[in-house]
Image (cartoon, rainbow, N blue to C red; front, side, top):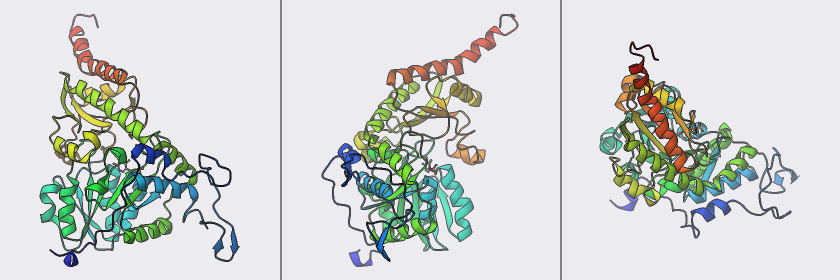
Length: 417
Ligand SMILES: *Cc1c(COP(=O)(O)O)cnc(C)c1O
């Protein structure tokens, strides 16, 4: 194949950054204020910007939905960390997904992995169809992709690791086939953050994030972003960002940018904690199985080694507990440091039961085919101390699995319980 009959012009990559991740996280998009010298950028709340004559703004800005200083700086930082030429911020991860899907012409076809984030699944099945964009889901995209591609296929949507079973996709393998057919590949990188994985380096065309999770990292902002290298994509998505208007506030951009400056520290600590918790769970007789990409026992550990920084597993894991759904619920109530709540990626550790919470809307048969059984517990490891998290998980396992058995035994007619 020559370059000329290649249907996608591979856009020039962003120049290789001179500095390493931590330096970029702290400094990219963070200029000193040229007037006051302020080291931290001020929050620019103004919605409109003065002009000297009609159509001649004093600076770069006219109206805050179109662009504003805090969003610009945050977007520059994201572009640097995802090795992208461009990045755009949106009011949520879901608004990011919606805007990317809106960029497709009516009649387009999308191929997605089956176990996408619940809200993405909902948008694909309940909203995209209304502007005639159809989505096919597959549980094994690396195997099926060639047979699922149609002439109108325009986009492939990958989540790696998947939620909540933490299965992985080889991005390069999918992108190679997709690009032969002129199809763009989107990777939702929310679960790992740009510190652990940079999908554009593995052939993806667009990387998206729910900034709400690791990038902001403090569970106090809902926001999303997309990063990419193609100038055409930048024109189209910038137009839609402004036209649809699902944009974050200047204050949220400022908060998320502050959170992002410590992403590398938080991601390293969360990985260390998740590794310790995964190992403790794997060694426990009360656990049926553990899903964690950082464990050598993970069926796709080779992809972890190839795609993730230093073979890191990230801060998310899930496991099946002995004793069924009741034991899973008891476990989540017995933890003292892990809070029972949805979401992930914050400094605090969280625990939840996907079958009854985040994935409760998916029919049982479909859910179990994807490995989401009633006894599955999902954990987001925060940045507390490893020994405390390990001990908390072990004591909660005892309470959830062993405790009820003892009570049941004692209460068996002897009048003691
Ligand atoms: C949370 C999440 C989203 C949606 O992001 P919001 O900011 O909640 O709209 C998308 N993808 C993944 C993997 C998520 O975890």
